[in-house]
Image (cartoon, rainbow, N blue to C red; front, side, top):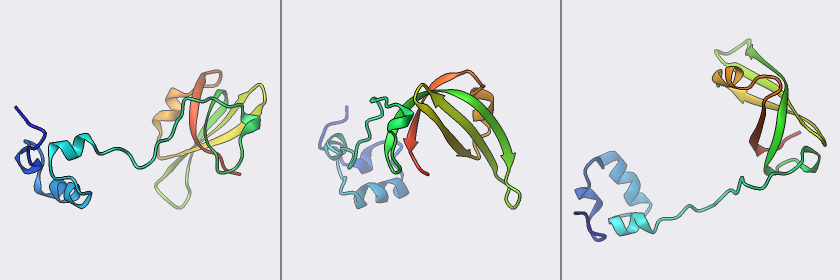
Length: 120
């Protein structure tokens, strides 16, 4: 059984490189891990209308996919997925890089929640 004061070196699966990273965070025991909390917390549960978004806001919207297309960046080996999302208050473009599965997951008419940083 693992005790709270057990050094992380004794935990199976914690290798030397990971251990070095944990030590840099000041984590040396299991207790340290249990009481290590995120330095910031983003609450994605509040859904806001598109019209209320301001540049730089980290928010969640519930919108339907109006259009979606996938292009290849001409100078890189990168795929760009562009979508037009909308709700009753307006529309907003969304962009994903190198995540081709999104094109197959999001189809026009699908309603979903989208979280991220609003930009111009």
